[in-house]
Image (cartoon, rainbow, N blue to C red):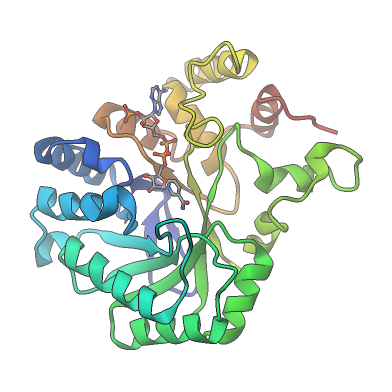
Length: 306
Ligand SMILES: NC(=O)c1ccc[n+]([C@@H]2O[C@H](COP(=O)([O-])OP(=O)(O)OC[C@H]3O[C@@H](n4cnc5c(N)ncnc54)[C@H](OP(=O)(O)O)[C@@H]3O)[C@@H](O)[C@H]2O)c1
């Protein structure tokens, strides 16, 4: 397992993260096995959100590991809030109460990282910043970040808070590449040139913000895995299978490696509930895909290399 240091913090994190969004499909014993497997593989960061399973995923996580100070010390916990019933909420009142809920369900007195889940156009940045400062001062949250935000949204909130926003969590995979597309096709009159992220990849490198990739195996928006879908992604799956043979790993590992190969140290959030698939994903933590292979996979996914 490769570990990365998050700039400006004392956090050393595995570049593979266990995502807990689907945890509530498991029994307590199955959840425990999955979390133990993750820890044995070297994963030290677990991604939660108040919305996952309506809070059940956080509760089950704490119950499955039998959360106590000694286990808590062996892991870093990250949670998120802002998604409510049909709207997003960056109000101070909501953020403070949401974090209290996360702490209670996870049976801990602090989160190592707290992210604002989806941008709220009705945000009053000074109010949101007050919530951030209060959470930091009270010791309930150590470090802060965002999710699904572009550089200008980050800049706006950053202007109002002294706490550096250190993480942006975005959908990224071999078949979901807007983070890279426009940078690869600057100034061309093709769809790939359309900047859908405000240049978040380049911005994150300039500002030492760690990108976290959600849904690394999903096509579209939760439409199921692209791995093994030879009908829609035949060329891509053939190339993945061939590289899996070369590196003596599974196709899952190659899908992960395409993201971990990026030099800005992207963290990949695995959402699997299957311990073997989790192990397979972890073996993609540090595979030295060549430039030719990385670009080849990008092209095989249907993208143009100018
Ligand atoms: N910030 C955000 O807005 C946001 C949004 C979504 C998710 N997230 C985070 O990102 C994490 C990962 O998201 P995700 O769960 O959508 O990601 P994912 O890892 O791409 O998808 C996991 C799902 O795909 C299935 N799967 C993966 N590979 C497969 C294969 N080869 N064959 C069959 N099934 C396969 C898994 O089934 P098995 O369980 O059977 O392996 C599981 O149902 C979440 O847990 C959450 O922490 C964040």
